[in-house]
Each structure stands twice: as structure tokens, then as C-alpha cells.
Length: 132
Image 1 (tube, rainbow, N blue to C red):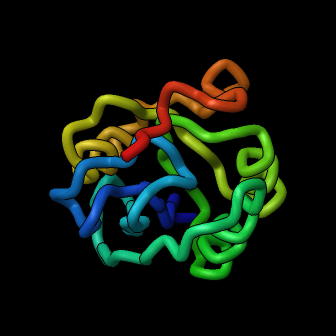
Image 2 (image 1 turned 30 degrees about the horizontal axis):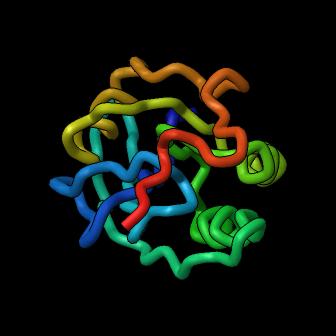
């Protein structure tokens, strides 16, 4: 069976391969979604983040799962969205400091990203948040 991933990357506006990845899952402008099959990136499109109320981190997870996403690359997120991702069958990978979404997707395609673990979780007001 072909190993195909539909990967979402939280992205700064306007999203896309050249966008900067957002440092925190729930606070991004959009999700850049791409298919990775046999190391190749294709079917790139942008899904706007409709936002969520504080504590409503599960809604974006449900929307991504409904769109067929089965992997997500994030620099930070809280326990609730991570648990919701796991329940939805979405594997979360950890990446931070990537200059572009394309770089993050290429690292995922090459199998270079670690699985997002408890040590990467944001606890309350985490350092990944950007305030205006």
C-alpha cells in the first residue's frame, strides 16, 4: 500500500508553500494542506482558520479531519487539541523554526520530523503565542 499522508501545516497569512509556518496550531491564519506520497508534495491548497473561542480547540481539529487530513505539523499546541488530533486519527509531528511551509512539508516527506510529544505541549500561556 502506498504511504500517503494528507498533511496540514498551520500557516501565517495568506498560506501556501511560501508562507511562514505559524508557531501555534490554534492561532494561525490558515492551514496549508498538501498530499505527500512517495516523497512528493502535491495537491496543495489553503483552508482558512475560522478561529475558535478560548477552550474551543477541538473545532479546527474536526474540520481538518473532515477534509481528510491525517497528519499535522505544529510547533506548539495544548493538550486538548493534541488529544483531539489523536482521537481523530491525525498524527502530529513537531517542527519549529522552519522558514516556509514548503520546508516543513519537505522535512515531513523525508521522514525527518519527530512525533509531537508531551514535552512540546503548551501549558497555559505558552511561549509560542504571538500577541498583537
